[in-house]
Image 1 (cartoon, helix red, strand yellow):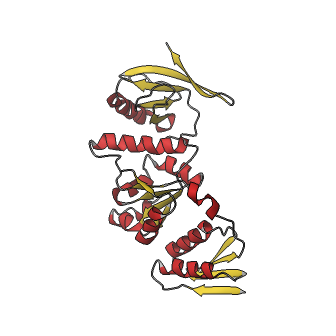
Image 2 (spheres, rainbow over the protein chains, first blue to last red):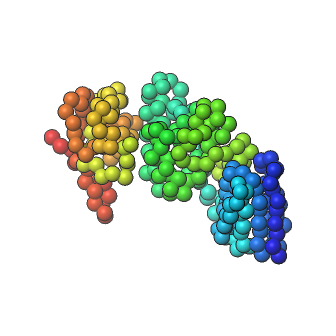
Image 3 (cartoon, each protein chain N blue to C red):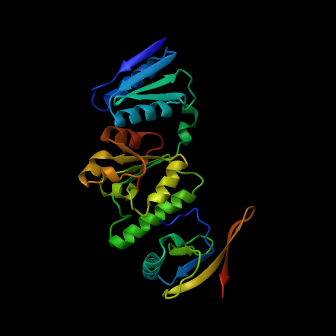
Length: 194
Length: 84
């Protein structure tokens, strides 16, 4: 059975909630979700990938996206108890104190993460920490390396907008409060870094 | 843009973090691609310090504690040999 969800014009996180309902109910051979904006497309894709669906395709036409998956699903729950953590960054500085030292410590911390064998599953950037993921930031190459190695990077959209940095985002994906709160409560919990 | 994937020949440690930060300014004023500021590797210091990896050691750097040759070996990993 082909199941199709029309999630156009629905506010976030509704598209993901509808997708989750369809996944929980199951019984489809292919599942299609239609959305009309980029963040919704990314959120749905990410949800499906995290749920074990790896055979995804995305078709774009006139600003609308159709995400399609078959019913093949990798088992993901077995390793959930060992899943590495989410790291939550709320400032561009590491710790409070002198700004120059805080900047240096943050750079060192992100570099050290790239050297770890067991990397965190996800980094979440909020408030002034979003600048770490933008063009010209000295932390950018390390974040790109982490993303390349499979670490998910979520960046607060409200914060990018507030600091006029949305156009400058150079790594990670723009996310919203719902996805971020979900991310912080998933798996082995989160560690606050800044 | 400093690239950590680049192969650097030297690692410089400093007498204090202030000198590391000053040295970075010197590197930046010359060639951004020629260095990488990193936390000092555990093999060299157990303290939380910062050092600079580079392709060549420029003149005019203050507060140098030691300079190491970076030796990479597939089986033994990275070794640091101090230069007298």
